[in-house]
Image (tube, helix red, strand yellow):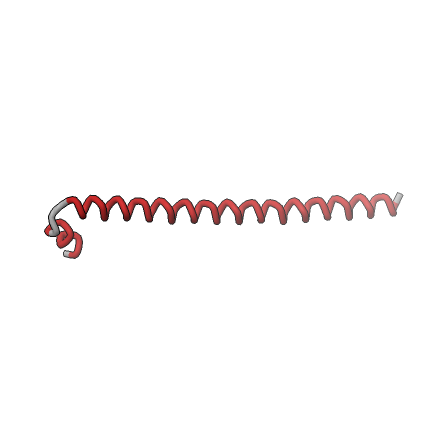
Length: 66
C-alpha cells in the first residue's frame, strides 16, 4: 500500500507540474498576442491620424508641437 501511495503522489505531482507549465505557456502566448494586437492598433491609429493631418493644412500639424 505504501508503494501505491508514493506512486499516486508522484503521478499527481507530475500532472500538476505539467498543468502549471501548460498554463504558463498559454498565458505567455496570450500576452504576446495581446501585445502584437495593441501594437497593430497603435500603428493603424497613427496612420489614420497622419492621413487626417495630411488632408488638412499644415497649420494643424503645428498645433500638436506646441
